[in-house]
Image (cartoon, rainbow, N blue to C red; front, top):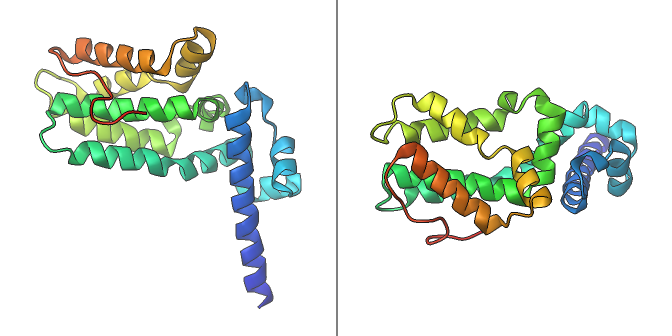
Amino acid sequence: MAQRTERADALRNREAVLAAADALFAASTSPHSVSMDDIAAAAGVGKGTLFRRFGDRAGLIGAVIASRLDPLQQSVREAQDAAGSSPRQLVLDLLDASLRFKIENRNLMTAAEDAGLSSPYQAEHYGWWHEILRAALDQVPGVHNADFTAHALLAAIRADLVAHLIDDQKMTPEGLRSSLAAYVDNVLGGSSHQPGTRKDA
């Protein structure tokens, strides 16, 4: 019974830490302003608990991102299942879904890039996302190197760039999504409808 109680307490602590970190990054004006001390205090746990559970700041940020990926993965499934989508439109819808996730979670994602999970390219979710996009690009006529093109398109929606354009350059989310659609059009050739006609952020 004592072991079960300990496991239940550990699970509650983990959920409290993830919720506190998520809320603090969402409310912060800068990803650098959220410290491990802040997260521990907001979660009502000792700082040592954070390091024992998550290892370091990068590990904690990675766990928070993992807990936030469900909406993005649902958007990906919807894009893949959409009837009548051309391969090019699927690429645009996938990138638009990722961009909306980056916009909504830009402080958290910028913190992940800073803490690097050492480099964004080493993060598990990057590999997952790159493979999905590469597979879609493989079906687009005229794309000769889907692997590189996937990396290049993902570079256009890095979290630090998204944060810079929205927070520093005061670009609107709608303007950023429209610019991304135009950029993808230029890369892939042809024309496609602007994002948001099927689903909006």
